Length: 161
Image (cartoon, rainbow, N blue to C red; front, side):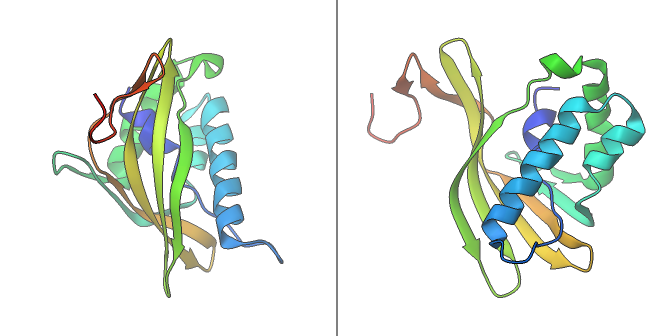
């Protein structure tokens, strides 16, 4: 289950409201998707949290594994067994948001706090506009979840001991 929650939150999409920036739209849709994941109690409710994924969505994991949308949905069924109020949903901190000619790339830290430790990983998501709105088509997780902060001390910065 620990590996599922970080994957679920970032992938969301929808329509761009008049006057909104693409960045704000994607951030708002991610928050909405996370809310749907937080409250899902049944398979249909869980499936609805994935409604904004493109059918061809693929995840590339740190050891070279490839995850399809069907595989992600199957793994996510474990979420239903956890009471909504105690589900470990991660925090997303955007590092880079870049709109290209045909897509949007979002690089972010995806992390959870447990006691005095913050653990997580760095991700890159690719989004594309579709007739149904913005949809995530790819997610890349650069390394396995690891401690990022321990008692306030950075654990991943180069040259920091």
